[in-house]
Length: 525
Ligand code: G
Ligand code: G
Ligand code: MN
Image 1 (tube, rainbow, N blue to C red):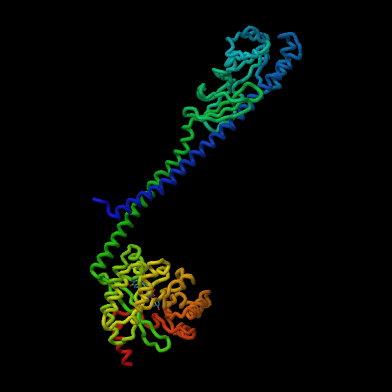
Image 2 (image 1 turned 60 degrees about the horizontal axis):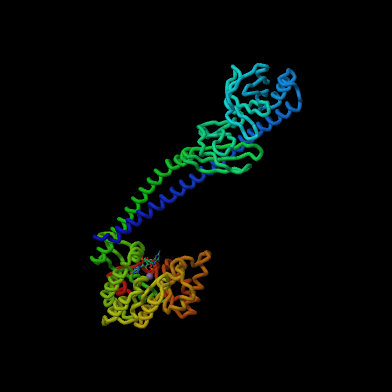
């Protein structure tokens, strides 16, 4: 079984709803992901720069300390030299101690005095001879391991924690100071997880980089002055966390809204299809009938004609055309309604004309009607009725109908060639331009009620009605004023030279028997 157009529309609606909901969620997740990646990167860079600055300062102080000891030329490990070392020690905040070293043994130092302290082999000796002893304990009371850097018999003792002692907002940042080397990086100091050798990449001196390594966002910055590099590694997990928080709020919310929208969509689709089937059933059962609103000569108050207005009777309720006509037009069901209206007029017209052979009935046509050749056939059938002639008929169409192209023009011309006059309905509220007025030929202009309402008020549109009347006169059109509700409006329109009017001041729309009765009693008067 192939799906019905309605099923297809419903599916389309659901798909569109889902896309329109998931898209913003997806985009916001993507955005928050990029955003959290960017902020993690920026954070890492700022930590890395801070740590590098401290590590360089440590190196500066080490170099300075060594220079001062050498420059003093004091006897090695003499009381004088130890005093100098203690002074230097106090001057420099990153240097913990300074001493003499020989054969992996501290001979004397500012903290141990003359006591010698044996060390293990250096962890690393650089090309320039700088030996690094990492995580060493030199006194009994020392509460955390120290690093010793030795060159030319002098040892500078530092606290590896100090350069790393930046305040961390983020718990799971891993920081390491390394001396970059060809194969195995030498970790001078670190905090957090064990450094993964893959985090270390060779970058030029004085530069910084950021790259992803297997679940981590790594930021590397290399000193321009020392053989030092700082690495900050953030687990990507850490970035997911923020995104997850957003997702936890938005995805269920989106799904909920989506479900609501889909439900509403299905509800509307069902309501729509039920309206469709109601309307179709009404057409089949011919539940439509026509009422006639008289069109009146403003001077004599004679009824010269009437507009046929369709009504839908559903049981005891009457449904107004302003509700169902636009929907019927939308569903392209209007032509079948027009056909019913013309059928009713065909039945009613002979009775009306028996009372007044010059009476003119106006029939409303929709854009679809004006595109269809069937309309001509229907009108010809009306004209074939013995008592009916073309002067008894007028068709009304709104400006929207005139917006259409060639076919409409052809049908309109055919109607006029039958001798039936054409009126523009609700004139002034649509989008007719003067060029359109010239390109379609028509006979009557029906001034929309809103302009008639403004007569005698000081609203901006109160002058417009005059211009419309002037325009009609210029184009040699007859004018019908719609929605006349008071004698004041009627007398103004008379003064403006308008001949015909329609409105509650004269009569509401009447069912045929009432129309005929009224016509009879008027003839008798
Ligand atoms: O008077 P009433 O509320 O019935 O009119 C409401 C609107 O419905 C008016 O704009 C009128 O032009 C339109 N209308 C009434 N009858 C018909 C009809 O038979 N066909 C079309 N296309 N429109 C109609
Ligand atoms: O096709 P058209 O839009 O001209 O249909 C006329 C519409 O205006 C119908 O809905 C009809 O009921 C309504 N109408 C006709 N005369 C009056 C009137 O004097 N006052 C008001 N408020 N509505 C009117
Ligand atoms: Mn009308």
